[in-house]
Length: 198
Figure 1 (spheres, rainbow, N blue to C red):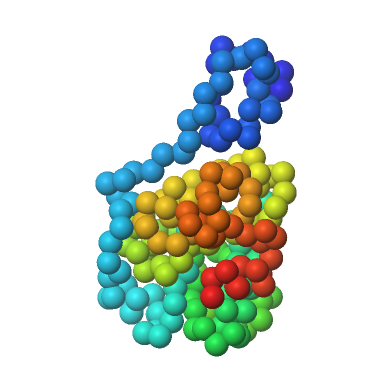
Figure 2 (cartoon, rainbow, N blue to C red; figure 1 turned 30 degrees about the vertical axis):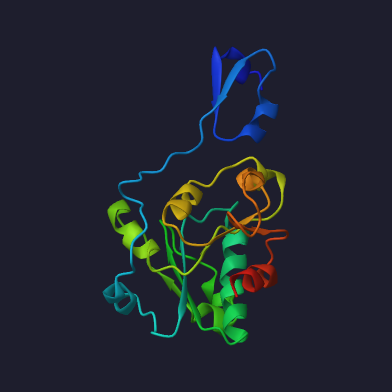
């Protein structure tokens, strides 16, 4: 906090971060932007479904994001949810892209691990076509202080693609009307994610 006090002004990525800014300092909220020339609604490229091993009858969740010690539990919950969706008789595949591989796939139930394609890191220009394959986007996350004060950069990209978005009741969820602008998760647990997706 003393470091922030040395600044002449502060820019924050979401309003909840104002609690970290001294009240006497000028503070502006500048939310994460999105390249609307790159991330735009489009029809799915069916050849990409084939390329990535998506069966004709499968629904698709696309998640592009890195894995680290903070995000691993939430991404694992998303992966487990995919298994539950399949268990409920709704064939579903998760296409995940990101810098580091999902190192926990071997610990998941088979109905989850067999329905996840970890595509590795893709060039940014290829992402919109992959995102266009999605039936729904899920931003996984626990309901905790870490998630509440961050703003995942992929949420604006999800929204720009004009597909349903499911996100936890943290960070900017208060800007959305549940069921209209987005679908809000109350716990972020796999069973809730699966139910909301279905």
